[in-house]
Length: 312
Image 1 (cartoon, rainbow, N blue to C red):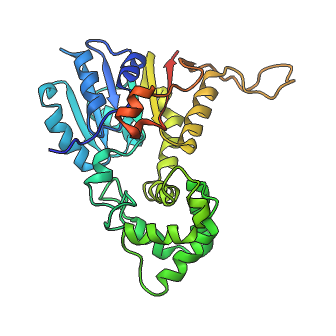
Image 2: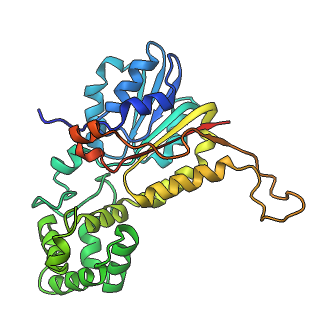
Image 3: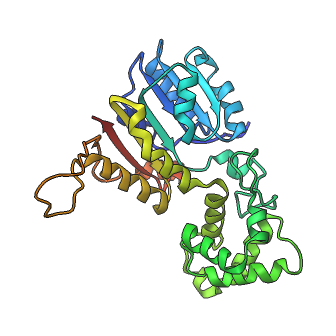
């Protein structure tokens, strides 16, 4: 059986979550349940894990992987932005730790058949939740050239966005773009060969990332979640977030720093009028990165950043 996913920085995650027996934790992005399994081992015999994923495949996998801990877990299909609702359904108001792992799972890339990989001939889907309405194919064939260019720039930070958008529109005028391989070829044809030869990543990497982010509204959901996460943690409860690109890491870093501050009045104000209270203590001033040994064993870990904070 193919490995569903290899969890990233598991030791660091468990350390910063400060997992203890009898406590309550939320793994908001189950993936292959590797982190969830490690958490369950630490909180047994009477701790509780709330497991969430918007991919039904991940929920089905979790029921198998976490079978030894079925009495300790509550599984929910949905986006982590709905954590408060899932906690309420479980009769829980707050938890002792929250984990977000914002990366794709190996299963989604290699086995889901949803076009996450530019190396395969698959339907251009890219939905993590197959019940959601918008597919990558809808965006590629429905947005006008300017909208495509903005999407690729804003979510992919791709310097050749204009060329790529123009060529997408040209190709779809002849026939709809329906597969990941079709799109990957268009992107490769849009970037000069001499530029491609100097790149360390596949030419289509940023475009596929941009589409995935747009289809799943990833940055929007993350921003909404970070706005309210402090309300879901007990005092001394921990938040750990694993990010894999600068756009999502920027959101997490900025919000944690904002919640660590007491006063946010403009400099020079004679008296504080914002009445803001400090909500978090940052546990690692600089984002942690995986070690060379882990990156060698799991190349998917190479871009990972871990940020952690404690609720005051």
